[in-house]
Length: 162
DNA sequence: TGGCTGATGCCCT
DNA sequence: GGGCATCAGCCAA
Image (cartoon, rainbow, N blue to C red; front, side, top):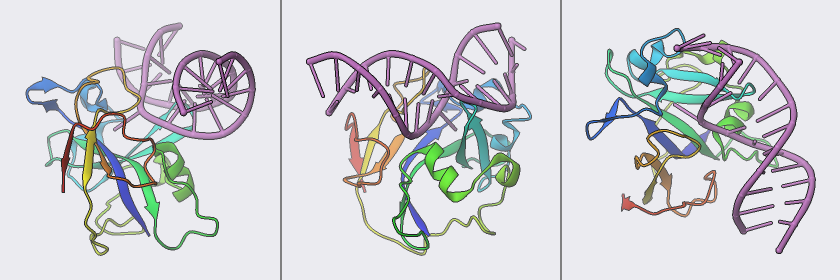
């Protein structure tokens, strides 16, 4: 059991400006097809030849859009010492998430299950996304404020919410 | 503390 | 063949 504390959104367009950092910007390919499918499914891709990254498809069927899971706070079921899940490549390695086993997986049921059964209140920091070279200004990274489990300190605080 | 670099596989042109 | 939604280790200060 783990809590999501940091995500980034990859969208079709932001206020009418195309999101060139999104993999779906290149259109439907064998790699990106699941992003155009129904929401609640896993988009898993390989980055830099060695790290798998987990996304959750987050737009209606037929439209592209997904959320990259960048950091988790371990809650239960992890050994001692707890693994650090503060990075998209690290958390998939710790959880055993891979393209071969999880590409397109239904996250509304099954072993990788998304739930709101552990609610809590928190404030959100909104910042630019990390590690990209296109559409770098879009404020689409969302972190739990003051969480020690995020991948990086918040570089710029753009806005807050709850 | 912060910046650079190598490792490494695959997708798309 | 170029570039990539990363990370750990190294180095200088």
